[in-house]
Image (cartoon, rainbow, N blue to C red):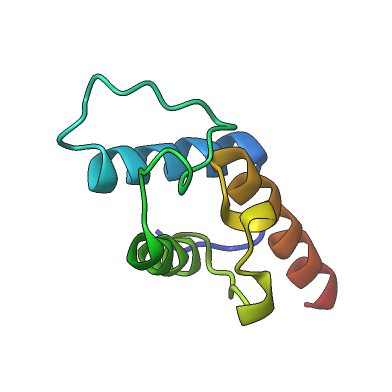
Length: 98
């Protein structure tokens, strides 16, 4: 499966993929934990600074976008909803350039 910046890059798609990744990689020992799309990933202790780097690698590999150093903020990567908005915006921006 190739990841291209097409109409399948919706917020719902990114949210679903990101939630699955976080659940599988960070909540595997806490299956009963209820993670809302707006919960702070750092604030709830789901991920730590190394986890942020893992999430960035996942975003870049899964969605084919590049996360800039200046973009590593709570606003962009702090919750599932933030990640979804950020990835969709990156995909749209790179589609306009292409």
